[in-house]
Length: 194
Image (cartoon, rainbow, N blue to C red; front, side, top):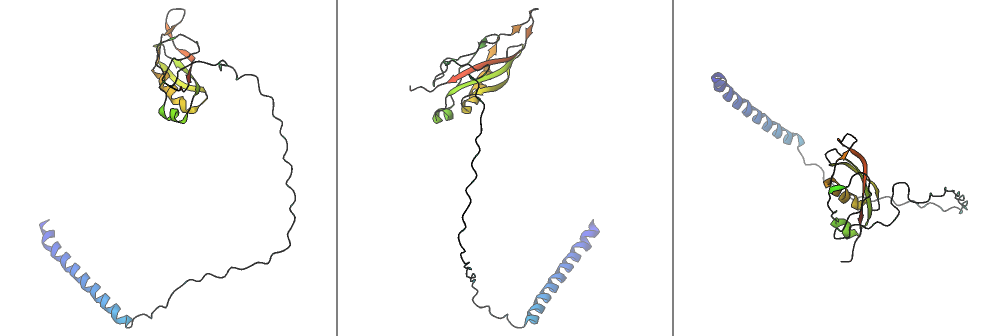
């Protein structure tokens, strides 16, 4: 290590000095070889070519467009479909009023009113959101999913609300708590003037 320091540092300094001298000599040689300055460059401007004017030929008559075919749609089924309530459902008002539900399974023991999202309120969004979910044997809500919605802006509020609910566990014939699948709950979001 000491040997490297004693001979390496002065050697590196000598090599660096020689490189600087060589570069200086190369720069001077380049000035000598040019000898005279480059010729001056005149005013450089770009002039685009003149557009070519094409002669206009006789006008051709276009054929009329083909007639649009008429499509026959099947008649719509009567009513909104299976599992969707058809009667008007009273529900939470703009200030989070009462909640409506479809009685499937056991009733909830802990439930919260949905909070009307401010961004949806500002857009005037309202309507019914139906959520389907499962209830664990302990009564917790799992796997919530929106199955019908009149306004997707309200879906998240309905899902967050139902996730906080608790149910009384359903029991089988032996008295053991069992999970409930496909429980449904509807939330009716309506704006009020108040």
